[in-house]
Length: 280
Image (cartoon, rainbow, N blue to C red; front, side):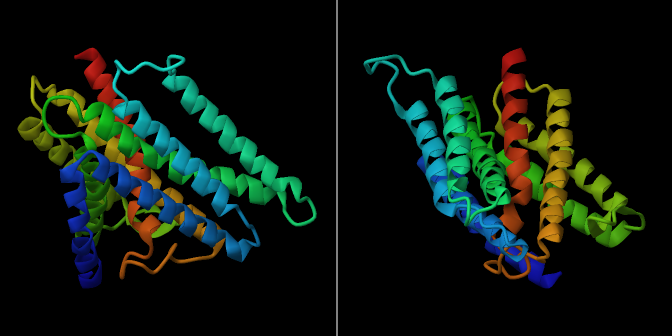
């Protein structure tokens, strides 16, 4: 436990980048996405599957580039045509799938699984991670602190309190076939404490009238998908036959081992906050 706690504290300075906001968040998310997808692809080696890291890099850089252009181009600046950002994202998805399939054209060297793993890595790591940038630039302009904090509150809060809740009270296994150490009591502790943290953050740091019920839902859904993210990563690792994605962080494995839940909470928080802003 000591190693896990100390390693978790070692991650704390990275949250300074979240506090700085803007391009610091963008750069941080991009680096995490590129490192995470490399670790994810390395996990396939034991299965004799060889996804394309260069294609993933190109795809991830493009979608982050779209984000930067979208939120940093002055609305008054004139272009030859008006940019439809929805179309830009759809084209990015088309291009990513296209490149992943073209990767299979060396038919004697590559298998179908190589292309499918490439697409999966791009979407699972790159596409999910880019929601951190969307939350910062799109929703961070709302009054009060940036909702990016909610991504980490729901992810890390759920993980920390589920761990200690399971350690102190755990008796009933949650998903023994996937993650033997996780317990029902730990999961409940994680959900309840995350809801409390989410509501407290909204009350003290988000300006305007706060609908407590809506932020209870943000905490609830964020905590649940955080656990889904952790369990999904465990499924991948079991199928790959590895314990951790990497060894960068003692006690936590690689970057992807630490942010697997963030990859799930980022889209959930973004769309939840969009909904709250829409009905407010």
